Length: 272
Image (cartoon, rainbow, N blue to C red; front, side):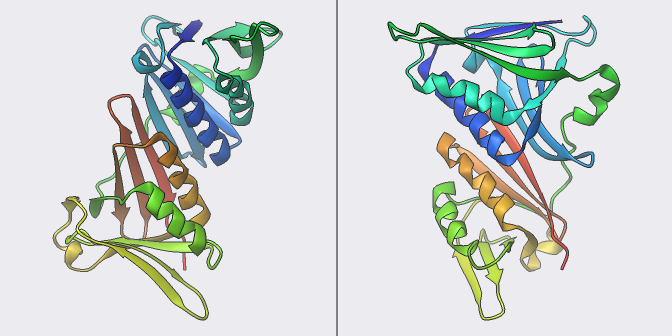
């Protein structure tokens, strides 16, 4: 098993740091799946996928060497503390020249980061992030999620605008109802003992819709703080974000940035 990569592009280092920082706010522990062409970050709970991110390695790395467990199973699965990797990458904000990341064994497996800095006093930062190498018998628990057929799929408004609204709503209610209909109306609604507050966005692109179900709004009520965590992805300036709803069961948020970043975020519906 072998893994080594190198980043030198300022934009790539910024993007990678932003991605890991947001993941560290969502979860304590994260899984990283390494293949010959992708890095996949995933978060699960009770064998259900909550988050899946696919990063195309050619966008981020000028050097990328990965030899998996075997030639037939050319993959590596690692589990680590997301906040430790985020803290280690914070040095990239100091106008780092480059960063090398490699899988090492220092009494225990680690992702070792060698960060080259332009400073005359400190030329290199070295960080070791302990990891657990996930054995093959557990790989099935860390595969790409199965995406169900949703009742409706609609473009979301700009995340920055939605984030400002939801940040105010979260002070009034722990849950939010997300709705959409075939006319392209997208609604965020909270209910309290004293009031019902809703925001409507109109004329959004509808990608798919179950004709039978779409006579009325399709909706699901979810944890507002978990929804707000997803909205932090506005920092990567995604090209498109789709909201997919399974009536009273799930909200799936799908974010895409060019051809190098795809994210699925799953919000299970809350019971009444």
